[in-house]
Image (cartoon, rainbow over all chains, first blue to last red; front, side):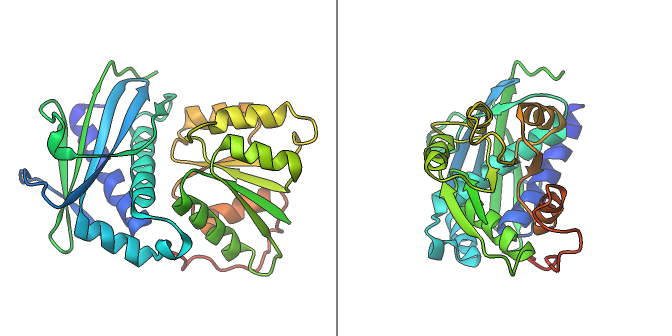
Length: 147
Length: 137
């Protein structure tokens, strides 16, 4: 798959997963986004077939809305659990889309502080909610081989 | 009927449970939660179940190790294991089926997919009275 097609595939998976899991409509957003104040970020490591990371950054306001809308707190599920599961599904679906015949392994999701991470080598893709808030996906990979 | 749901995410366990309840509204089901493969295995040794719905990517014991343990433990080996995972591309699905899974479902789980799998393994009939298309919309 060509590089431009990766971006399109990731855009599509992101929009689908956020809609299916958080019931939130988002659209890809090409403008540069640099302000990550009042956001929550979760990271998942890619362990195979390449080494890499994927990070999702979501405004605290939207994250709280997802938790409220899903009413999961009534069942003991908390925001960290919800966002961790969303990025887990997101990255799994991205790999299933871009490398359907390739065995892959992911790490476990964990909360990170996006401001303290070196993002210089990461690709950033942005998405806009209907409330005009920004969600971002950062990713980078190396040693990528598909079989 | 006893159904075990194995996933480290409470959200995922709840989604799965809701889907099963949607497609089997009249069934008396006892749901047993486990947060990883090790937790599941310990509970199963005390109390076997009729079906296991299991994630793959979990701490402590992954779904891979879990199904290997299940399939080499005679009293538990016949329990059908269905994986519900985001890692369900063709390569991974083939891999899990080879290990003994009866089916692999891509997350996020949907009632219609659960229904077709439960029909496939004979837990519900093909004409089960369920209308789950409006769930989660």
